[in-house]
Image (cartoon, rainbow, N blue to C red; front, side, top):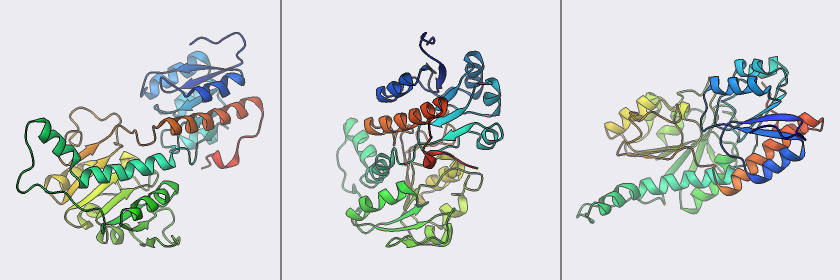
Length: 325
């Protein structure tokens, strides 16, 4: 969209939409919003940034790298439409004096709910049973589903989303434990803490991923971690796809060691049509939608827009939203 006469700042939105309350925040600050197609490439973001000499980027579905930052001499802030910041080159931003912000807590409850929904759907065989009924079949003599009560849930990471999962899981009668690779010695209150990922995996029936994607956590859930889970375990990921070695997961599913996986995220998004986990009979995939609820979209958009407006107009950006090295 072109800049209205009253606009002072150009803001790139790396997706086709932004919640109306967030649009209002930006427009009140004198910003014109330039929307992009879903999942734009780094080159596309860079090209638009240079073309309009962007003052800010509201990053939702496209990567923001050093080349993008160098494309506009006016760029002062990259605000994430969400909690994770793995799509932004943080070190490059710091080196250029560009502020990076995120929206902590904006989608916590929504992602926690989605985590439980994936587990319930897997344990109750909702997808294969619905498919069978749609094809004209009905319950066979051996058809059964699994109990949730009594299952042991292991949380990889113990941030706000993982903590929001705890009361939901315990309400179903699950016991919960955790391992946090960033804070391995932290006490988790009533939730039992394990000192290593292997210890966690050997003592749970469900492994649910809730840590950020960093160089240290990339492929942290590898073949060894999956093998440490008991036969028939489930794997859930509503964090970032790169934390799980997808080839190792596919192999564990194929040999029946892992009973099922609920995946809201993939290492490459969207994954190619040939990706082995897209149509795997033991996988329930969703398109990175766990945090995409009406309420969360408003929360994420407004928090990001507030940071952009503050940065560009000289107001104070909330310190807890600023991402450091």
